[in-house]
Image (cartoon, rainbow, N blue to C red; front, top):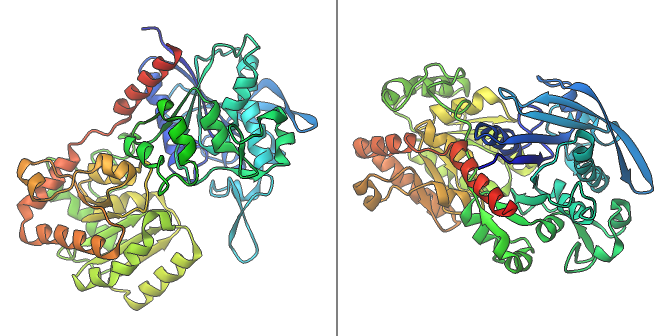
Length: 500
């Protein structure tokens, strides 16, 4: 079959600017698609984090002229390559929208730090990302790159399919199909009705069937309504968001559009997350020597977090945004019980102040059993994955999840709530699945501290009293293939259905 030409539009891409899993996907999927023979171009904003990052782009001669509100803004395109690939990524340079202090470290792309340290959305986010969505489509005639597919991601690019629908009369856009990926439906990009005029879209689109949602302009809804296909980052999450419990108000719209809704689990970049290649570990290992070499990571992890170096103490690790979605409340409620079971707990993450305060207080009471790092540090993240005995991920909801996939590869069985991508990727190591050799982790259904506690208790029973069974879970987990090669094949099939 002929190669496809694909334009990926995203507000963040790993290697340049990242706040979460969206960046991992938009950095890895284009490379995997290119390896399958397709021509892929990526477009993202030129943040300060990009300008002063590890891979500073070069200026091009291309200048876009982008209408926004009552004016037209000229902005230059910069370019680079996705790290380790020949995939070209273009950056839209609009300093008034993207050259901001909080974006320097890649953590404030959408929010500013207010006096007192709390975060607040930038008040002009609607204008920033309406501009970027329009600019991404202006790239097509400017570069003379004629894509078969425009792949937009999350609310920040939700207007891309809406603009594309308006440009259909132009031959440059007439045959382009669009895919809109929902990475997390909780973030929708809702703004006042007055924003509509600034977008340049026709006013008649502001109605309940298209862009309007309870009197507001909803960017995510725009993507769902106008895209030729919509997908989420796991099949279970695609089903869940059609219910009131998980749909965040969009469930009715998604049921209406269920014929064009599907789910594809995110992949893992095994060049980065692979204990046999990982330069950040004291000893590299694979399934053939995991039980001999993995303990070195555990000892280093205990040391780095100021805990007694004791190979007999089970270490429960967590790397996550410290927000309610990630089940931090369940962990904190269950944590005293985990300590009574003789565990050490290690937390790495950044998020809501209330969880920061609770973790700091918990650490102060139990400094010999609890280690915390409030923030994100790449080396520590790898060390937690490798050095923990169990990885905690009891999410309230989880569209896809990546850390549970990292944990599988690192031989650290994850403890998860069976929701979204966690349900699709983790096989519970109950007695039946231990008997048939398919268990890869430990899962539970009810969102309660007792369900989490009992699941960890069962995992520890295997760890201490049935070590052969526990080791079987570790080895089965490490042999799983959740690479981008697998996921990109599913995306290719979806693209080909669209171009038909």
